[in-house]
Image (cartoon, rainbow, N blue to C red; front, side, top):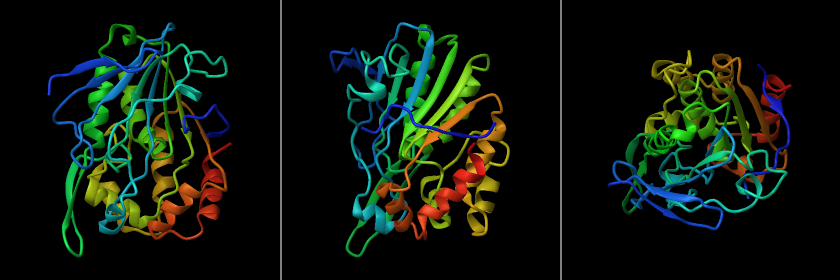
Length: 289
């Protein structure tokens, strides 16, 4: 199944405890250790019960860092915040395809595209900058909670979605979601990220984040990730997207991007990439219908 390129209403706009955080009945869940944000703030996630037998698992965006320079710049979100009330978060907007769905919102505060499991100390000129790249730990805590709720026992449809860095997080975690619900109809939607990543960013993510993917996806085991990271002739982003799509032939994959996306192009340049627009267009022409 090739990836569809389309426009959707945008998402980019210790003991477990819970609390209501808005009039739309989002509930905040605080799972406690070992979850943690990049600079030590507590991690929490948000859930809203819907009225139909469908589940959307959403991964928030918010930058990233992968080496001493970018982690010193602070090009990432460091704390958790609740979802808004517009776009895919609206419970009253009929244009929202997830308006009445059970909705898990996974905040992003670990600078690792929701895929890390490592605390790394980056050496600067005057001090050491310790970053908790624990996105995978946080994501699993949130997903395990949602999967265990009675209303999510056997959903008819499950969508894994994300915005910006959360779109890569959705690619990382979609196979886990799919495996949890083998009999459901599955969808993936990525907003404002289509898979473009520089060779150096990918290599640093493997080393400094312990970036890993589901073992159910052939070719994305650690040995192959290291091989791809070491070979600059391989397009790492294209490799990841193709492997994930190939492993999920019954999942409908879709994404949205813009050739004028300053955020994507800036992060690509920070990672040593050149000519993001042409790289993006090559990737979309290769894997998108």
